[in-house]
Length: 115
Image 1 (cartoon, one colour):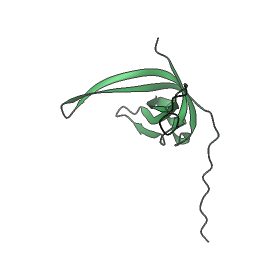
Image 2: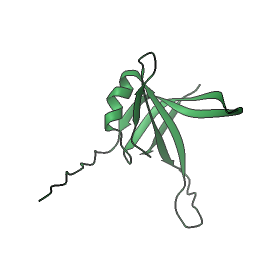
Image 3: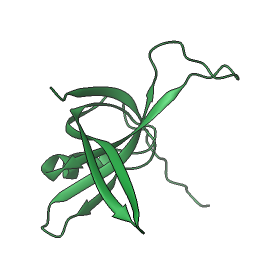
């Protein structure tokens, strides 16, 4: 069974792009606080940083609203892939999201009025 449920904050605005076949792909980072009271020497809580990928209609629907700092819940699966860059083998582990739920209200960005 490969099922992942995460709650965390987006580390950057979602990046929406389209594959050569026209498939929508959105990606973003997610900071997930550790449940147990793991603290750094400075007393701050620790977090894990997870790469998240969304495909198709869900990517197009979610991406415009997914900005840095938004609290989201992700339901999906872990995916791994390997590739070679400059002769070096690399491995990527990411979460493929099947659903995304916003758990906070969007922050309104007020327009600057010059006067």
